[in-house]
Image 1 (tube, rainbow, N blue to C red):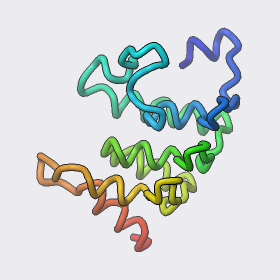
Image 2: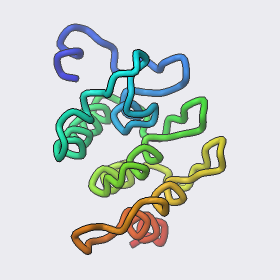
Image 3: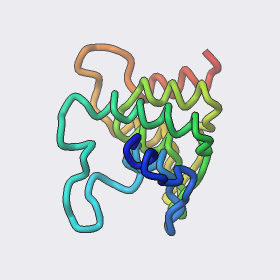
Image 4: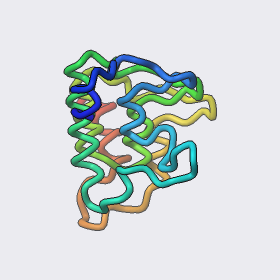
Length: 137
């Protein structure tokens, strides 16, 4: 992303389907590009969440709206929840993300997180994190 910015890319541009660069980083549009290829965030297992966090930090520093909604009704929080990125979700919440937005399918970040398997390390699941954040803890 920094290379794109160095070459003059405007990070505030919103695509035709309403997605922002922050939503793209969260995988709101999927893990496959328009040509059917897997996106870069999927090429290196174990690096996706830290890379997504870096993009999220940079995007918010540059003024991208943390609560922007795509035409499908998804936010960055939907993407982070679907991927189980707890550190990113916490960061988004700390920066004002609204976590109970329903998309056009009626899904909230919590309903997406509830579909994930239990945490392998026995730690807090994404659904538990979202419930804790909703309770203001």
